[in-house]
Length: 195
Image 1 (cartoon, helix red, strand yellow):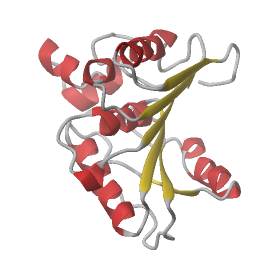
Image 2 (cartoon, helix red, strand yellow):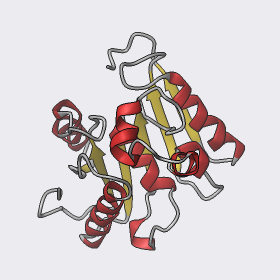
Image 3 (cartoon, one colour):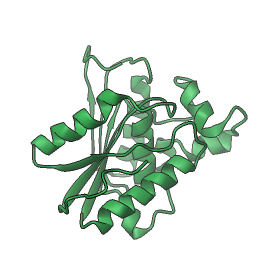
């Protein structure tokens, strides 16, 4: 569950969170992304968060990883996630209770599951919250409900309909970010090969 044991200190570091519905880690959304970022001189590592685990285990594990990366000398920590990994990235960026050394400075979400209130990707919600999750709990980990004026920079990308999420997720989050005056970008790519 840990990233690489020896992180090269850099002022910025990006933690990559692969998707997989909280049930697996998609290999194509981990190391290839970190290597691509490294090719641009960006320090990056892949974090394999806990799978088949109830909330808040994945969030707690990611916060511990952020602390570890920051303790290794990185000043600004960003997260990039895909699908469920994007939900976790956004959750870490927005949820209350983060210590100063657990703060996310920027978040990039790709075809993110942003709301646990919709039925568009029920399997991930069931893994994270269980069958009988109350509407209050479902709202409490929906990214659009967590946005405040103190949220970090956000960028989100999706296509009109993917296998795992729908464009409404990106729009819900963008509307909340805009309502709170948070700098953000939303990109919708028609036919962009996301699954």
